[in-house]
Image 1 (cartoon, helix red, strand yellow):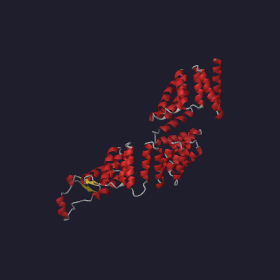
Image 2 (tube, rainbow, N blue to C red):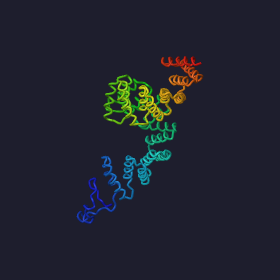
Image 3 (cartoon, rainbow, N blue to C red):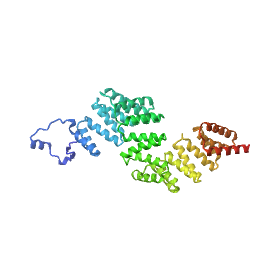
Length: 429
């Protein structure tokens, strides 16, 4: 390829002046050897301008000129291809960079990162460890990468150790976020909060949001609201803070305020199933059942694998005396969250309404196996056992419920239902 670069562009061959004429006109000798890095500045300029198509053409030209020996060109091509989703090909370019310069740790880090994205976690760890050996100074990105690989391999202790090392070496919030999420998955929520607080020296937006999310999981509404409010004070249009703080407003019964906020959010991100779900529940609480179902169906369409839209649709159909429709969505909820007892319990109630008593007993039995001490599960289980004339087991379940009532408060409705079931059992006997 003999094209000539001019001001960032390529002059067509037909417009190029013959080399001999250039020599004769300028009376200067053109050097026989060109520096490999002579056009790296041009590649960088086009890349930073996001002119990726032109950048790739220039990279191919540079690599062809110097037999793939231009390290920066290969590196840039790998980065662009990975951004475009072609991770396998990008890995080849990063390996080419390593062949050209094996002591540059950035090449090894990019190889490891690509291997991680491809799911080759053990090979990624090997590359990170090799980069760690040749690194002259501690590198937090290497330790974070190792931590992410160990998380993928479910080696929690090693992952925590590496992320803590990364946290000690930088003020960047990424290791804090990774470590906090890891601790939350281990039910060490308070430890995660301490990690977030330690790293929140400058009130980082992402850390504040994670703190708010964590407090919300603990049902600490006051602290959650405070952290979301801090984010919105500095970033009024931050969707990640607007949605949860609006949900808090919704839980306090301010449905009109919540709806106005949800509408503004939907203008920015109309494909958020969470917002459609919450909007539907606000409308349902306001008595607009048809519109609520439409919003919830929209949420279910946007994310059929989400639990809440299908669960909420089932509840609304069950409360609207449409148990057959409710069964469809409760089954979908079970598929999405097979370890959650609530869809099984509600499915049992819907099947009970349809007079499928055997199916109802199986569903509630599964709920009981997942939550054996939940009062609501126990009273429903006893009720369906009484219907199926399994009186002895029903008495045993009610006895368990009585034992639980000694150590925790039981709702009055559950107590009243328990008395009715006992009366029915005694009458049958």
